[in-house]
Image (tube, rainbow, N blue to C red; front, top):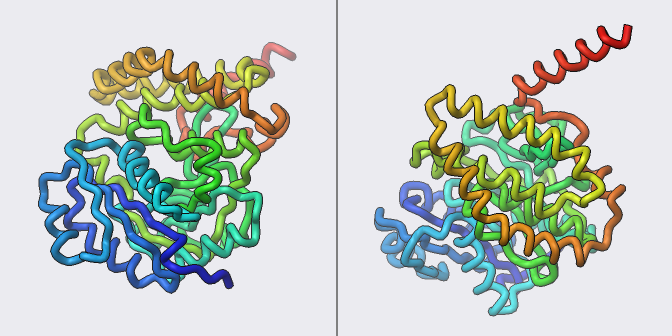
Length: 343
């Protein structure tokens, strides 16, 4: 098994008003069989989080920020610190998560076994220890990303180490050399899907991503985002098209874009019917405002691409996410209509 010291592995934890969850998170990281250097990016909390870290966890590097930079901006502060201090591996970990003792060691082992892999991701389990949160991220030909296995009962289904499309930013390990090559997280995402975006960019640049099933952590799903009404809807409507426009090759746009538009406007309609119309519409407006940034990024990403369009097509999931029930019903009706017309 791989051995490493605190000199080359850092774990970055973005924190916003997570005082109640931080102790269990930090204790689990300090108890790792491979002890990392721990960095907490204090994202403008008002609940005494910074004082807690200073008083009870003096070994933690605390990077206080004057305002909430979101997940993407927060982790970038920690990653930048780690890169400036020559850490070779940088893990990201949610403040509302707890790691098994060998979580980090298993992720390091996965990268050591796969030198072409730039990211290793773990088996993330909900706090009830009965259901999965994520076993890596997938990106569909409908332009919809989703965490593999979410909501499924914990079993041996995902016990094999394998390459996967993307890694959850909540508990994954990144090579510093990969981050230096593809860049840090896109702060326009703020939160939601920024981990899918950086995984897509890594794939485009020729890096692999590996799922390490023996690396296990437990996560309180939505513990932070649920504090803000309409937050998930706003971020979804803002960020979904951004992944697509930045990363999908032009040859695949005619295939993916029509599906994404159907899915996007379906989400918009559902949001309106459920009383979340304004956050959804605001997300759309901000997405449009971000277009200059998006297409500047796209030019850079596509210019440096080293994999083929066929490779990108093959690593995408050729189906809808399992929980896209309305879209599955709509698709079934469409194919039924097509078959009836063909008779």
